[in-house]
View 1 (tube, rainbow, N blue to C red):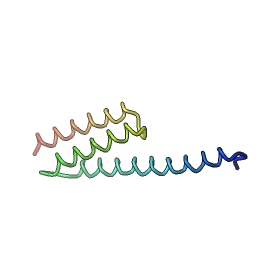
View 2: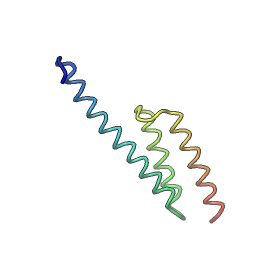
View 3: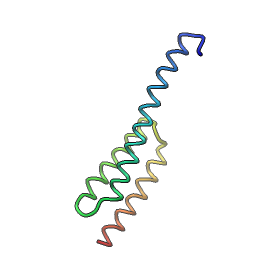
Length: 86
């Protein structure tokens, strides 16, 4: 247990950040899975939503910027492949 008031506050605030980061990462994973399983007309709006979520997470420091960029690139390639196939 912390011995100082500032440490107690630090624990509370870090717990809150941890919850926020975990929820954000979970939302991103869910959106990516939704995009990968969708077909037809819903591809573009889902892709824009995922890109927006990734950018927001990178801006807030939840994930590194390069990781967000890499995932966007890979998803764009998958999307292009799906469009070419169907």
